[in-house]
Length: 311
Ligand SMILES: NC(=O)c1ccc[n+]([C@@H]2O[C@H](COP(=O)([O-])OP(=O)(O)OC[C@H]3O[C@@H](n4cnc5c(N)ncnc54)[C@H](O)[C@@H]3O)[C@@H](O)[C@H]2O)c1
Image (cartoon, rainbow, N blue to C red; front, side, top):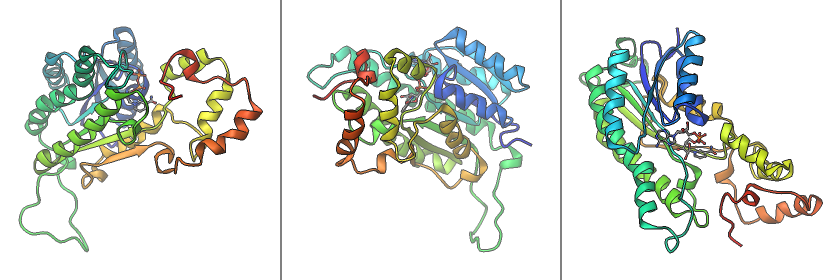
């Protein structure tokens, strides 16, 4: 039996990248998945791929920045699967978000904050009542209270729902000229804590994930464009585990946080970053010096015009 048998989920931005990895993992573990994405061809293809492997998946085209999408996607999940247990809020596209407070235009600030933060508020607004209405799957309703466990009265509601909000290591630490993304991803952590407090009594846990650099389909394209593996290798060397991530690394964390085993974990931000954010930054540039001197022709993604150089 899969750990999500009988459970129904929504994954926003589930067509590609991290969201695609999460959708596949939930389906592999027996859950039904509604993929919501602006990319219609990729979303339909990922849902079809899951079904071809015997999983349960539907696709709904939708832009989560549009206020109506949250309501529509919850209604679609409930009408397709009969219930809703899991919401993974992952969709994001980083257009027009570079710059400091002086450089950023008000319109881009409002659009960015709406997508990064507002969409997550709207998702919870409609998903939480649907999770409550669905109730806990009977097989997951209560943990076993045995041995050293102690409590009084009726056990509280457990495992009624799971919300995962995708933050970033940029929500934990600042990077230059990235006001919208860094402030937005930090706000995702605050919003996650608030939701955990509000929805814990309902049996719904809310956690955030802070991925490090995850090489998705889009990430692969970016590094191919750089056209020189030296920069990517340097990037990897900055990670204590000496590799960057893949969508499956994030899907594993999401799978655990959505499982029955994680019912006592809520309001947390889990960095899934190969140890990058616990590393002292002070000596990092010095450590890179020998590599850069030995590879003078290396290029990085900054050379393609992406990212924001500080010097
Ligand atoms: N890849 C990384 O290194 C990394 C690191 C930290 C955090 N993250 C976060 O993880 C999440 C996923 O990132 P990714 O790298 O997989 O991105 P991606 O671009 O590979 O995939 C994002 C998916 O979301 C969809 N999407 C974009 N805007 C949308 C919208 N408004 N409504 C609905 N769907 C939309 C895209 O079509 C795409 O399928 C984002 O929240 C991102 O900030 C990614």
